[in-house]
Image (cartoon, rainbow, N blue to C red; front, top):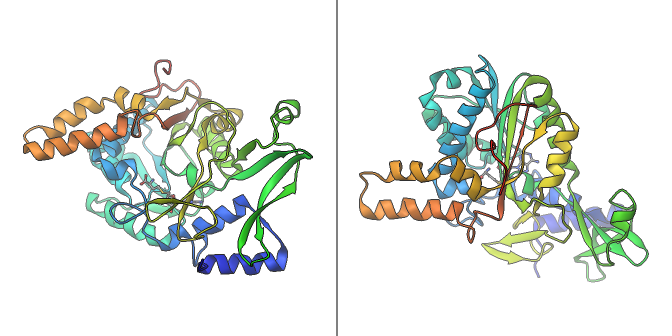
Length: 363
Ligand code: SAH
C-alpha cells in the first residue's frame, strides 16, 4: 500500500527514537501542522468524511444557543462572560446559536465569543460563518488560554478527537498499545509493558485481551474547566458519541472517504476517533469542584429543549418538500437508530446552578 506523507514522517521518527503510543499517533494524525487530518483536510459535509449534528439541521445549534441563554439567565445574567466553543469545525453551530440568541440582546452584549481551534484552515471558515452576525470571535489554541471570568462552554464532537491511550491486559500484566515499524517497513501495532490503568484489583481482574482506553488530554480539559466553573461560575456542555457507564473495549476507528478503514492505513488522510468515556469526563470535572449532571442521550436532551416545537415553527409556511426535509433532519438527530442514543450529553455546572434540560433525572 502506498504510504501517506505522514506515515513516512512517523516511520522516520520511529526509526530514530522508537515506537510511539496510540495517543501520540492519534495526535499526529489529526493535528500534525503539515499533514494532520484537521489541519489540512475538509472533513465535513458533502464530499467530506462525516456529517455532524450542526451540519444536519440548524435546529441543533439554535437549541444550544437557547440553552446558553437560559444558562446565562440562571447564572444571574452577568454583564460580561465568555461564550466558548471547543473544536467549532465550520462554525455552523456557533452561527446558529448566536442567531437564536438574538431574542436576548443582553446576552449577546455581555458575551465574548471565544473559539478553541487548532486548525488555521478551519479558523478561516469559522470567521466566515460568524461574520454575518456582526460578531467578532477571538481564537485560542488551548482551553487553558480562555480568558478569566464566568464561562459558558459548548463542545460537539470535540472530545472524540482528543488522543486516547490504549491499555491491554496481557498474560504478563498490563501493556500499552504502541505504533512501531514492522520488517516490511510499514506501521504496525505492538505492545509495551506498563502500569495497571485502574486502582489495582478491579482493573487487574479483567480478562486477558481486555482493552481499556484512557484520554489524558480530555480528562485534563474537564478538570481545568470544572475548576474554572466552580470558581468563576458557568457551565460546560459536552456532546459526543460514547458511553455513559464505564466500559472497556477498543473503539479506535478510522474513517477514510466515508468508509471504515484500518487505523494505520491512511495516517493524516483518514479521520481517527474513539468513543468518549463520559463517566471519566464527569468524574474529572466533579473532582475539580464542579457539579456533573446525569448524562442524557442526545434524543432526550433535544426533546427536553423542545425540538418538536422548534421544528414545527421552522417548517410552518414552507413548501411541502422543504417541510419534509426539515422533519427528516431533526428525526436523524433524535431517533435512537440514528444519532439519538449513541450520542450523549454531559453538562457540568457551578454547584447548585440549575441547567436547562437537566432539571429531572435521566432516563
Ligand atoms: N464541532 C464541529 C466539528 C467537530 S470535528 C461540529 O460538530 O461540526 C472536531 C473539531 O475539533 C475540528 O474543528 C478540529 O479541528 C478541532 N480539534 C481537534 N483537535 C483539537 C485540539 N486538540 N484542540 C483544538 N481543536 C481541536
